[in-house]
Length: 337
Image: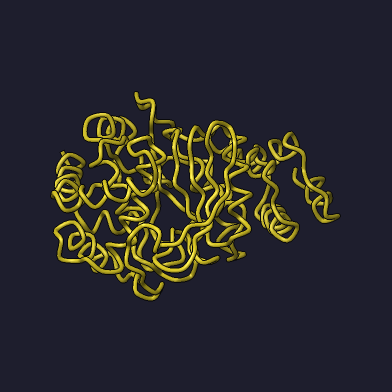
Protein backbone atom coordinates (compact mmCIF):
# COMPACT_ATOMS: atom_id res chain seq x y z
CA UNK A 1 0.00 0.00 0.00
CA UNK A 2 1.03 3.65 0.23
CA UNK A 3 2.25 3.78 3.85
CA UNK A 4 5.96 3.54 3.07
CA UNK A 5 5.69 6.38 0.54
CA UNK A 6 3.65 8.56 2.92
CA UNK A 7 6.29 8.04 5.63
CA UNK A 8 9.11 9.06 3.29
CA UNK A 9 7.29 12.19 2.06
CA UNK A 10 6.39 13.12 5.66
CA UNK A 11 10.14 13.21 6.36
CA UNK A 12 10.39 15.80 3.55
CA UNK A 13 12.18 13.38 1.24
CA UNK A 14 11.50 13.22 -2.50
CA UNK A 15 10.34 10.01 -4.12
CA UNK A 16 12.39 8.47 -6.91
CA UNK A 17 10.68 8.02 -10.29
CA UNK A 18 10.41 4.29 -9.55
CA UNK A 19 8.75 4.93 -6.19
CA UNK A 20 6.31 7.44 -7.67
CA UNK A 21 5.46 5.01 -10.46
CA UNK A 22 4.70 2.27 -7.93
CA UNK A 23 2.61 4.63 -5.78
CA UNK A 24 0.55 5.83 -8.75
CA UNK A 25 -0.04 2.27 -9.96
CA UNK A 26 -1.36 1.36 -6.50
CA UNK A 27 -3.77 4.33 -6.66
CA UNK A 28 -4.86 3.84 -10.27
CA UNK A 29 -5.47 0.11 -9.81
CA UNK A 30 -7.67 0.58 -6.73
CA UNK A 31 -5.25 -1.22 -4.42
CA UNK A 32 -5.47 1.28 -1.55
CA UNK A 33 -8.11 3.33 0.28
CA UNK A 34 -9.32 6.94 0.35
CA UNK A 35 -7.56 7.75 3.64
CA UNK A 36 -4.16 6.69 2.30
CA UNK A 37 -4.73 8.49 -1.02
CA UNK A 38 -5.72 11.68 0.84
CA UNK A 39 -2.66 11.45 3.08
CA UNK A 40 -0.37 10.74 0.14
CA UNK A 41 -1.46 13.62 -2.11
CA UNK A 42 -1.68 16.07 0.81
CA UNK A 43 1.82 15.15 2.01
CA UNK A 44 3.13 15.52 -1.56
CA UNK A 45 1.60 18.99 -1.82
CA UNK A 46 3.04 20.12 1.53
CA UNK A 47 6.51 18.86 0.55
CA UNK A 48 6.22 20.24 -2.96
CA UNK A 49 6.01 17.92 -5.97
CA UNK A 50 9.25 17.55 -7.95
CA UNK A 51 9.44 17.39 -11.75
CA UNK A 52 10.52 13.73 -11.47
CA UNK A 53 7.49 12.88 -9.32
CA UNK A 54 5.05 14.65 -11.65
CA UNK A 55 6.58 13.08 -14.78
CA UNK A 56 6.46 9.57 -13.28
CA UNK A 57 2.83 10.03 -12.24
CA UNK A 58 1.96 11.37 -15.71
CA UNK A 59 3.44 8.29 -17.39
CA UNK A 60 1.24 6.02 -15.29
CA UNK A 61 -1.87 8.10 -16.04
CA UNK A 62 -1.10 8.06 -19.77
CA UNK A 63 -0.58 4.30 -19.68
CA UNK A 64 -3.97 3.78 -17.99
CA UNK A 65 -5.84 6.20 -20.29
CA UNK A 66 -8.05 5.24 -23.23
CA UNK A 67 -5.76 6.25 -26.10
CA UNK A 68 -6.49 8.09 -29.34
CA UNK A 69 -4.03 7.49 -32.19
CA UNK A 70 -3.98 10.49 -34.52
CA UNK A 71 -1.99 10.40 -37.75
CA UNK A 72 -0.07 13.69 -37.65
CA UNK A 73 3.46 14.92 -36.94
CA UNK A 74 2.06 17.88 -35.01
CA UNK A 75 -0.78 17.52 -32.49
CA UNK A 76 -1.44 20.61 -30.39
CA UNK A 77 -3.17 20.98 -27.04
CA UNK A 78 -3.87 24.30 -25.31
CA UNK A 79 -5.17 22.85 -22.05
CA UNK A 80 -3.99 24.69 -18.93
CA UNK A 81 -4.38 24.01 -15.22
CA UNK A 82 -7.17 26.50 -14.57
CA UNK A 83 -7.69 27.31 -10.92
CA UNK A 84 -6.14 30.78 -10.98
CA UNK A 85 -9.21 32.10 -9.14
CA UNK A 86 -9.99 34.85 -11.65
CA UNK A 87 -12.88 33.06 -13.39
CA UNK A 88 -11.67 34.26 -16.78
CA UNK A 89 -13.23 33.60 -20.17
CA UNK A 90 -12.13 30.35 -21.88
CA UNK A 91 -9.16 31.83 -23.73
CA UNK A 92 -7.36 28.53 -24.37
CA UNK A 93 -10.50 26.98 -25.91
CA UNK A 94 -11.02 29.94 -28.25
CA UNK A 95 -7.30 29.86 -29.11
CA UNK A 96 -7.55 26.16 -29.99
CA UNK A 97 -10.25 26.90 -32.57
CA UNK A 98 -8.16 29.71 -34.10
CA UNK A 99 -5.18 27.34 -34.35
CA UNK A 100 -7.31 24.67 -36.04
CA UNK A 101 -8.47 27.30 -38.55
CA UNK A 102 -4.79 28.08 -39.18
CA UNK A 103 -4.23 24.49 -40.32
CA UNK A 104 -2.93 22.95 -37.09
CA UNK A 105 -4.20 19.59 -35.81
CA UNK A 106 -5.66 20.27 -32.35
CA UNK A 107 -6.67 17.60 -29.83
CA UNK A 108 -8.24 19.80 -27.15
CA UNK A 109 -8.20 18.01 -23.81
CA UNK A 110 -10.54 19.48 -21.20
CA UNK A 111 -13.17 19.13 -18.53
CA UNK A 112 -16.20 20.75 -16.98
CA UNK A 113 -15.64 23.65 -14.57
CA UNK A 114 -13.95 22.61 -11.34
CA UNK A 115 -13.08 25.96 -9.75
CA UNK A 116 -14.60 28.48 -12.18
CA UNK A 117 -18.12 28.91 -13.58
CA UNK A 118 -17.30 27.54 -17.03
CA UNK A 119 -14.79 24.92 -18.18
CA UNK A 120 -13.83 24.08 -21.76
CA UNK A 121 -16.44 21.30 -21.95
CA UNK A 122 -19.11 23.71 -20.67
CA UNK A 123 -18.48 26.48 -23.21
CA UNK A 124 -18.24 24.07 -26.15
CA UNK A 125 -21.42 22.25 -25.13
CA UNK A 126 -23.23 25.60 -24.79
CA UNK A 127 -21.98 26.54 -28.27
CA UNK A 128 -23.50 23.33 -29.68
CA UNK A 129 -20.46 21.03 -29.85
CA UNK A 130 -20.84 17.35 -28.95
CA UNK A 131 -18.30 17.09 -26.12
CA UNK A 132 -18.81 13.35 -25.53
CA UNK A 133 -17.18 12.08 -28.73
CA UNK A 134 -15.77 8.55 -28.83
CA UNK A 135 -12.04 7.98 -29.44
CA UNK A 136 -12.82 7.00 -33.04
CA UNK A 137 -14.87 10.17 -33.53
CA UNK A 138 -12.18 12.43 -32.02
CA UNK A 139 -9.56 10.86 -34.29
CA UNK A 140 -11.79 11.47 -37.33
CA UNK A 141 -12.50 15.08 -36.33
CA UNK A 142 -8.84 15.97 -35.75
CA UNK A 143 -7.64 14.28 -38.94
CA UNK A 144 -10.43 15.67 -41.14
CA UNK A 145 -11.31 19.12 -39.73
CA UNK A 146 -8.21 19.78 -37.56
CA UNK A 147 -9.97 19.81 -34.18
CA UNK A 148 -11.66 17.46 -31.76
CA UNK A 149 -12.54 17.75 -28.08
CA UNK A 150 -11.43 15.12 -25.57
CA UNK A 151 -13.63 15.11 -22.46
CA UNK A 152 -11.11 14.05 -19.81
CA UNK A 153 -13.37 12.02 -17.45
CA UNK A 154 -14.35 9.69 -20.32
CA UNK A 155 -10.72 8.87 -21.13
CA UNK A 156 -9.23 8.38 -17.66
CA UNK A 157 -11.40 5.66 -16.07
CA UNK A 158 -8.73 4.75 -13.50
CA UNK A 159 -9.12 8.22 -11.99
CA UNK A 160 -12.33 6.97 -10.35
CA UNK A 161 -10.17 5.53 -7.56
CA UNK A 162 -8.69 8.94 -6.70
CA UNK A 163 -11.82 11.09 -7.10
CA UNK A 164 -13.45 10.54 -3.66
CA UNK A 165 -10.23 11.50 -1.85
CA UNK A 166 -9.72 14.55 -4.08
CA UNK A 167 -13.25 15.77 -3.45
CA UNK A 168 -13.07 15.22 0.31
CA UNK A 169 -9.84 17.16 0.91
CA UNK A 170 -10.91 20.00 -1.39
CA UNK A 171 -7.43 21.40 -2.13
CA UNK A 172 -5.35 21.57 -5.30
CA UNK A 173 -3.01 18.58 -5.52
CA UNK A 174 -0.71 16.84 -7.99
CA UNK A 175 -3.80 15.73 -9.95
CA UNK A 176 -4.55 19.35 -10.87
CA UNK A 177 -1.10 19.52 -12.48
CA UNK A 178 -1.43 16.13 -14.15
CA UNK A 179 -4.77 16.78 -15.88
CA UNK A 180 -3.43 19.06 -18.64
CA UNK A 181 -0.32 16.97 -19.35
CA UNK A 182 -1.89 13.53 -19.84
CA UNK A 183 -3.70 14.07 -23.16
CA UNK A 184 -4.89 10.64 -24.45
CA UNK A 185 -3.96 11.71 -28.00
CA UNK A 186 -0.31 12.01 -26.87
CA UNK A 187 0.02 15.56 -28.19
CA UNK A 188 3.41 16.65 -29.53
CA UNK A 189 2.97 20.41 -28.95
CA UNK A 190 1.45 22.25 -26.00
CA UNK A 191 0.67 25.78 -24.85
CA UNK A 192 -0.03 25.35 -21.14
CA UNK A 193 -0.96 28.07 -18.68
CA UNK A 194 -0.16 27.74 -14.97
CA UNK A 195 -1.44 30.02 -12.16
CA UNK A 196 1.86 30.41 -10.32
CA UNK A 197 5.26 31.66 -11.51
CA UNK A 198 6.99 28.86 -9.61
CA UNK A 199 5.23 26.25 -11.73
CA UNK A 200 6.60 27.60 -15.02
CA UNK A 201 10.05 26.09 -14.48
CA UNK A 202 8.74 22.89 -12.90
CA UNK A 203 6.17 22.03 -15.58
CA UNK A 204 8.59 22.85 -18.42
CA UNK A 205 11.02 20.34 -16.86
CA UNK A 206 8.19 17.78 -16.72
CA UNK A 207 7.44 18.30 -20.42
CA UNK A 208 11.12 17.81 -21.23
CA UNK A 209 11.18 14.54 -19.27
CA UNK A 210 8.02 13.38 -21.07
CA UNK A 211 9.54 14.08 -24.49
CA UNK A 212 7.28 16.91 -25.69
CA UNK A 213 8.56 18.21 -29.07
CA UNK A 214 7.63 21.88 -28.63
CA UNK A 215 5.86 23.68 -25.85
CA UNK A 216 5.28 26.85 -23.92
CA UNK A 217 4.49 26.99 -20.22
CA UNK A 218 3.13 30.44 -19.42
CA UNK A 219 2.05 32.48 -16.41
CA UNK A 220 0.58 35.96 -16.73
CA UNK A 221 1.41 38.55 -14.09
CA UNK A 222 2.54 35.82 -11.72
CA UNK A 223 -1.01 34.58 -11.19
CA UNK A 224 -2.92 33.99 -14.44
CA UNK A 225 -2.90 30.67 -16.31
CA UNK A 226 -2.79 32.42 -19.69
CA UNK A 227 -0.55 34.97 -21.37
CA UNK A 228 -1.92 38.04 -19.61
CA UNK A 229 -3.62 40.92 -21.47
CA UNK A 230 -1.49 43.37 -19.48
CA UNK A 231 1.88 43.64 -17.75
CA UNK A 232 4.40 40.83 -18.09
CA UNK A 233 4.00 37.13 -18.74
CA UNK A 234 6.68 34.62 -17.83
CA UNK A 235 7.36 31.90 -20.41
CA UNK A 236 9.42 28.72 -20.57
CA UNK A 237 9.77 27.46 -24.13
CA UNK A 238 10.61 23.81 -24.83
CA UNK A 239 12.54 23.56 -28.07
CA UNK A 240 15.18 21.13 -29.40
CA UNK A 241 15.40 19.34 -26.05
CA UNK A 242 16.15 22.56 -24.18
CA UNK A 243 14.22 25.07 -22.07
CA UNK A 244 14.45 28.76 -22.98
CA UNK A 245 13.09 31.20 -20.39
CA UNK A 246 11.94 34.76 -21.05
CA UNK A 247 9.35 37.41 -20.27
CA UNK A 248 7.06 39.22 -22.68
CA UNK A 249 5.01 42.39 -22.51
CA UNK A 250 1.71 42.80 -24.36
CA UNK A 251 2.92 46.12 -25.74
CA UNK A 252 5.69 44.27 -27.65
CA UNK A 253 3.02 42.72 -29.88
CA UNK A 254 1.00 45.78 -30.77
CA UNK A 255 -1.94 44.46 -28.77
CA UNK A 256 -3.96 46.82 -26.60
CA UNK A 257 -3.57 46.23 -22.86
CA UNK A 258 -6.46 45.38 -20.55
CA UNK A 259 -6.87 44.54 -16.88
CA UNK A 260 -7.38 40.94 -15.82
CA UNK A 261 -10.86 41.91 -14.59
CA UNK A 262 -11.75 42.77 -18.20
CA UNK A 263 -11.49 39.11 -19.26
CA UNK A 264 -13.74 37.69 -16.57
CA UNK A 265 -16.09 35.00 -17.79
CA UNK A 266 -19.67 34.12 -16.96
CA UNK A 267 -21.99 31.18 -17.40
CA UNK A 268 -21.40 28.67 -20.21
CA UNK A 269 -24.10 30.42 -22.26
CA UNK A 270 -22.56 33.85 -21.68
CA UNK A 271 -19.09 32.59 -22.59
CA UNK A 272 -20.42 30.88 -25.73
CA UNK A 273 -21.90 34.25 -26.76
CA UNK A 274 -18.52 35.96 -26.17
CA UNK A 275 -16.85 33.26 -28.29
CA UNK A 276 -19.29 33.89 -31.15
CA UNK A 277 -18.80 37.66 -30.81
CA UNK A 278 -15.01 37.31 -31.05
CA UNK A 279 -15.27 35.19 -34.19
CA UNK A 280 -17.88 37.42 -35.87
CA UNK A 281 -15.92 40.62 -35.17
CA UNK A 282 -18.41 42.10 -32.70
CA UNK A 283 -15.92 41.75 -29.84
CA UNK A 284 -12.64 43.63 -30.37
CA UNK A 285 -11.76 44.34 -26.75
CA UNK A 286 -10.09 42.43 -23.92
CA UNK A 287 -11.37 38.96 -24.86
CA UNK A 288 -10.28 39.37 -28.48
CA UNK A 289 -6.82 40.68 -27.49
CA UNK A 290 -6.23 37.78 -25.12
CA UNK A 291 -7.27 35.21 -27.72
CA UNK A 292 -5.07 36.55 -30.53
CA UNK A 293 -2.11 36.77 -28.14
CA UNK A 294 -2.41 33.21 -26.84
CA UNK A 295 -3.34 31.76 -30.24
CA UNK A 296 -0.41 33.62 -31.79
CA UNK A 297 2.08 31.94 -29.49
CA UNK A 298 0.52 28.52 -30.14
CA UNK A 299 0.71 29.12 -33.91
CA UNK A 300 4.39 30.02 -33.49
CA UNK A 301 5.36 26.81 -31.66
CA UNK A 302 3.61 24.76 -34.35
CA UNK A 303 5.96 26.28 -36.96
CA UNK A 304 3.20 28.17 -38.77
CA UNK A 305 5.00 31.45 -37.98
CA UNK A 306 8.68 32.47 -37.76
CA UNK A 307 8.06 34.11 -34.38
CA UNK A 308 5.24 34.94 -31.96
CA UNK A 309 4.69 38.39 -33.48
CA UNK A 310 3.93 36.83 -36.85
CA UNK A 311 1.80 34.25 -35.04
CA UNK A 312 -0.35 37.03 -33.55
CA UNK A 313 -0.77 38.58 -37.01
CA UNK A 314 -1.88 35.21 -38.40
CA UNK A 315 -4.39 34.84 -35.54
CA UNK A 316 -5.79 38.30 -36.35
CA UNK A 317 -6.15 37.33 -40.03
CA UNK A 318 -7.81 34.01 -39.17
CA UNK A 319 -10.50 35.79 -37.15
CA UNK A 320 -11.00 38.77 -39.49
CA UNK A 321 -11.31 36.48 -42.53
CA UNK A 322 -14.12 34.50 -40.87
CA UNK A 323 -12.07 31.27 -40.82
CA UNK A 324 -12.32 30.88 -37.03
CA UNK A 325 -16.11 31.29 -37.19
CA UNK A 326 -16.29 28.71 -39.98
CA UNK A 327 -14.11 26.30 -37.99
CA UNK A 328 -16.38 26.53 -34.94
CA UNK A 329 -19.44 25.94 -37.14
CA UNK A 330 -17.69 22.96 -38.74
CA UNK A 331 -16.83 21.51 -35.32
CA UNK A 332 -20.45 21.88 -34.17
CA UNK A 333 -21.78 20.20 -37.31
CA UNK A 334 -19.27 17.36 -37.64
CA UNK A 335 -19.13 16.49 -33.92
CA UNK A 336 -22.88 15.93 -33.97
CA UNK A 337 -22.93 13.84 -37.17
